[in-house]
Image 1 (cartoon, rainbow, N blue to C red):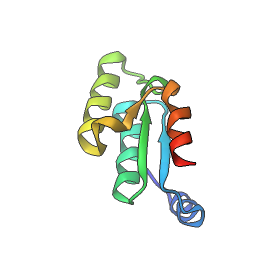
Image 2: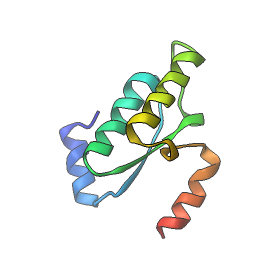
Image 3: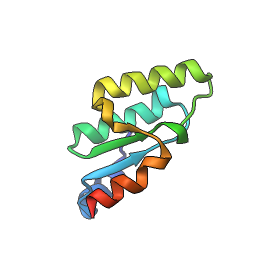
Image 4: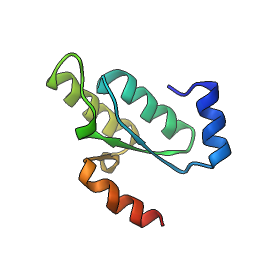
Length: 89
């Protein structure tokens, strides 16, 4: 979830893209990615840098739901980050 400080930073830096990863893919990570999407920031959910306290099944469900909300191609692996960064340059 974006705090007021996070929103201010995104505006100040004119972010167009954001890599999202963390703990509890199906809750916090998903919420952050969807918030970014709704703010017009393209979220990239880094699936192998995220996990769930509840196990693999909830993690997988979070990834699946994120793909429905932000786009299937927005769920990536760490190994894909460099390629995405080179496209943005």
